[in-house]
Amino acid sequence: MFELMRYVSKQVVKRQGRMGWSGATCVHIILEIRVVSLVTVLLFTTIMHGNHVVHCSSNVATTPPRGWNSYDAFSWIISEEVFLKNARVVAEKLIPFGYEYVVVDFLWYRENDGTASTTRGKDFVDKYGRPQPDPQRWPSSRNGQGFKHVADKVHNMGLKFGIHVMRGISLAAVDKNTLVLNAKGSPDASGRSWTARDIALQGEECAWMRNSFTRVNLSCSGGQAFIESLYQQYADWGVDLVKHDCIFGSDFVLDEVTAVSQVIANTGRPIVYSLSPGVGATPAMALQVAHLANMYRVSRDNWDSWNSLQPHFDIARDFAYAGLVGVNQAQGGRSWPDLDMLPFGFLTNPDDSRSVDRPCDLTVDEQQTEMTLWAIAKSPLMFGGDLRYLDDTTFALLTNVLVLQMNAHSTGNTQLIHTSSRDIEDTRIWVAAGTSGEWFIAVFNLGSSMKLIPVNLAEVEQALEGDNPATCSSSLICEGINVWKNQFLENVTNYVNATVPMHGVVLYSLKCSCLAQYRALVESIH
Image (cartoon, rainbow, N blue to C red; front, side, top):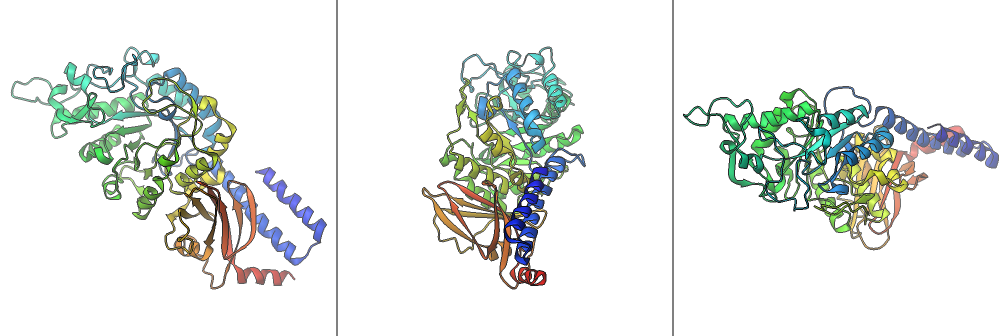
């Protein structure tokens, strides 16, 4: 922050020495101070009052959640030791930038004996049919402790703990016909207790985990009791985020989403409720869950290739147009369309039972494109790489202050459609309004060669008029920053011309004024 202010002072001295104190020089200095001061305020706001560092209420996900998820780097085989090592890096390096959730993904309850992740009978469950961590990979879970000790260690780092779960009930519980905890009544006239086979809906298995999980009959008291006991267990462990899979998109089960949302609220613990997967997700479907969940996937699994990244442009556009970004959630907090994890840094391969640690296959330009789209679309930001090998380039990508400020607090986020640049093939322009009157303009090149893409500032003004109207009858003049290059811009009038590399992005943060008012200021100084 203070380095920025020192920079301003040096520029003032340099200009005075070169040109003296002319009126135009004074105006340029004033505008430069405005831009640098804006960055200073945003930096202070992000660090001191950012995404989740300062808590003003118990509501969760009031801004898009940020954190780290284990899947992209470890698939389903992560251990307690490796998980906590990654969590410590989040605590030491990323928490000042609002990254606070650390999430154990997929199959933490599965025995890792070299068999496929879809093999039946490899899941650990307790006597009530509830999943329990694999004691070999998670040794602190032994003797019925579950994830309590891991959650305690995460909380002691100043972080929050999340887990991935599947819909319904494990077939391991069905095979063992375990009891249902606290179930009232009986499934039949015999007066016997409810069991897993009484509540499991045979033939309703998860389509891509048919040997592992099936739906629960929530129309009976036994099924409802099972869901209640399951999520009360997670709350008792100290879980702060639940990623609920095989429940959305083409696997949509609204009755379980509704039940789980209410059960989470009944636990009394603030828990972010996340839905997955996103294959087949539509805005119409999202309207049914936006008041029930805090985040929901809207795409298929995102990996580190351009073919995986590119479809997210149309998806993000459609959910923004539907007004689904930041919808108020019934249990408090808000709801965010989730574009999936950020596969940067060192990764594994999908569903791999080995530790690979290969570098991300996206170019640096493509990584900036992905980070910018996720941020301006206000998607949750969940990093997926192995943090033990966090490099400077990836760290800079994840912690750009203006990008994070845009993700957390901008409004009016949308893709421009009726623009003078629409005839330039493979071009996308997103805009958003900042909290201090600035405009964010992201110019994307989806093509295979560099492009010069002009952006009409009057069209940006029109798109954002409801948030930050400039109300100019004359032309606009703007000052600001090329965010990723950290270059200052001044005297930008009418158009900003972005030279964008293949698969790349240019992101601007601009403060604009009426040109007539600017000229009047210059004349008054003269």
